[in-house]
Amino acid sequence: MKVEDFEQAVWEVETIRVVVRAPAGAQVAEYSNQNAADEKWGVEEWLRKRVRPKLSGKAVVVLAGDGEEPHGRTLLRTLRGTYHRS
Image 1 (tube, rainbow, N blue to C red):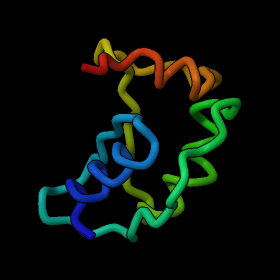
Image 2: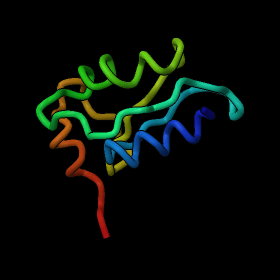
Image 3: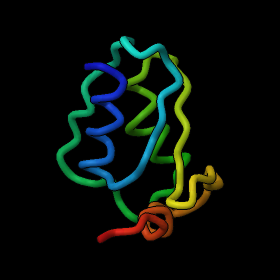
C-alpha cells in the first residue's frame, strides 16, 4: 500500500495522525488492524507493536492535534483527546 494510504488507514482505525518519512510513491505493508489499540497503551508501545513492523525500517512521526510530537509514554487515550472533532 502507498504511504499516504497507510497514513489514512491508521487515522481511520486509530484516530491518530502519523507521518511516514518516505518518498511519495513508497510502498509499505497494509495496516490491517480492524479495531483501535487499547487506550491504555503508550505511544511508543503502540508504534512498536502495530506501526513500525509494517514500515520496513521507514521512520514515522506521530502528531498530536496541535501538530506537536507527543512523548512516547503519552497514553493513546490522551493523544486521541487532542484532535478536534466536529
